Image (tube, rainbow, N blue to C red; front, side, top):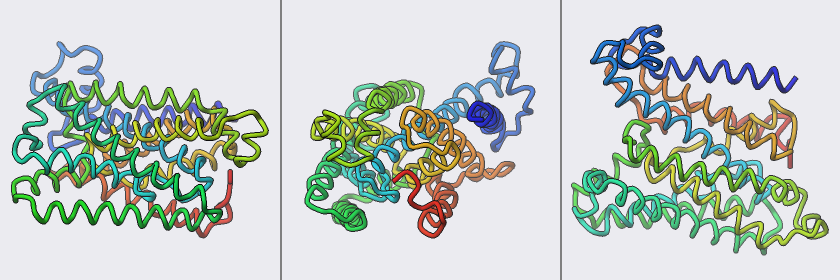
Length: 342
């Protein structure tokens, strides 16, 4: 049965990927998209340029973002044993934003969005490291506080409050920054899959692949932590070391993606629940690939909707993910399956 579900999801993924590349302000027939993808020299030069330089990198970014945010959300829900945990809810995305603000707002025009792109690989690594450190800092703070709390709801509220404090600090920082830097930073906060260039895409892929690899290798640790710290210790697991490993991989995933694409909400919280509901399991060796698959499909669909096919307008990706993710969060809170896997 699971094989059929995987095949169906893979089929939807292929269709969504092709539609994401085909649709946009310039209409390119689907058959020509396929031709350009497999034999670039045989197509119309303008269409080849649009597909290779703009739409293909954007579609690949959607795949990477869908995988990374979904798995980071899954790890946080397991670590906190809280169905409403996610990078955007617990302030991890806000922490990554603080790291990016540190780079973009602290050094004037030296580190503007344009300058970072011009710096190439070194600029990309600078913003990734800052973003990941910001995410890790907030996550360590939440884990430290949560170790003395027993109620998952209180942990969630603490995370939301820390996220609000972080966003307030960024707002104060923006207030005292120049209009040019604020404009750059605000554009980044809208969230976008289209701003990742070729070199940045490679770095993003490497960072997210490293985070996903650590996550997959930690599957047994996640399974043990899901049953409680005492059970994990009885299985011979060093809980503190396991937490550090999971915090590290989550920070790499959420921080790396936020650095290049801006804060993208709701994918991290919604997709793990869809994966649990669809595959009816709490085994992380199944859930992690399932989250990658579902997260990829969802991000591609969100990107297609964001492009408003046939128009010249592209909506911020954050707006669309909120429209898709919010009903799932309501279903988690109000539906009969709200505690599945916890």
